[in-house]
Image 1 (cartoon, one colour):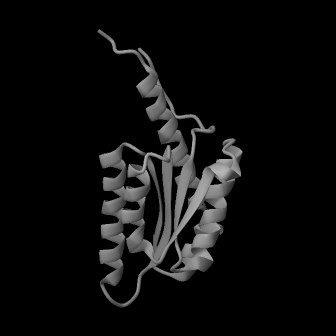
Image 2 (image 1 turned 90 degrees about the vertical axis):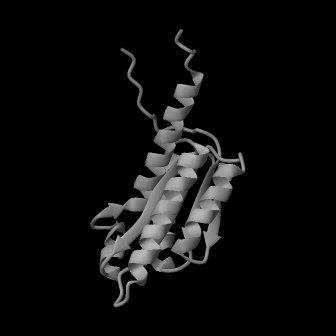
Length: 159
């Protein structure tokens, strides 16, 4: 029985979409994602960075990038920090749903690098601090998924 796994290697062009809101955190996520792309053998000129205003705009931009046909994978990076209002729940939930739709409707993997934290300290810890770098993890997930999808497309029909 065949078994497939996504490999971490150059898979084509990659779009990294980054929220400017909480840029102190998101720029560190971006550094992690770009490092992962370079480690996979993707040339710097094959990685496009698309800046958006906030986390909410990640979804529509991911959908547009995936629909463009230019990218083998998309990585979405943002940070939503809980406040005293329900705003956090709306932004985090709707952004997650929009990113999921972008991937499933286009079949272009979208790495989920949206931090949803209770405090800014937690966000910093997940952006290259004690809890690792979720930008790296999101990029790796997207690259491995893109490779896996490419493998599946290359398999001959079994009849």
